[in-house]
Length: 209
Image (cartoon, rainbow, N blue to C red; front, side, top):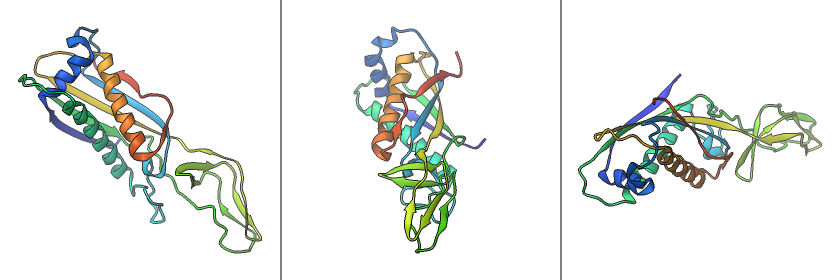
């Protein structure tokens, strides 16, 4: 399994942001390491396509899409840090890992009849884009005399998982509400940046006690 990993130093202000959100850590400790799993009906910019015929917004490889998702988490967490102000000399370090498993390789074939002949233009299992959302064909799509004969389709689905590990110089442990704040910040940024529709909230699972 190929992963992207990012390790950075978090500003002291992020600790204060966490304190303000959870009563100075007066909450049940959860974990400093957790996964956050998301499911979404993607726009093209939350998919990749290794074919050169990819549509605007698609990434050329799973690795490049994973790198973008990684950067989104980095920016979301740092944005939480800049929302608070403090001079306390306390630091976090953290790593972000994005699994490429579940990322959608969407071979997009436009819903266009190339001529007036009768032919199948796209097989079942291929994708098309409508209103900036990716759909998967459940049946072959045909053209008859230049007219498109649409078949059944459904919104495409993509899934991806972050693994985030925090290390605190104080030994404090993040609470579940801290992780909810992080997950919501990542999801909100992805929704705004990609226009994708997320199915519920991120599912948080601790990887260590």
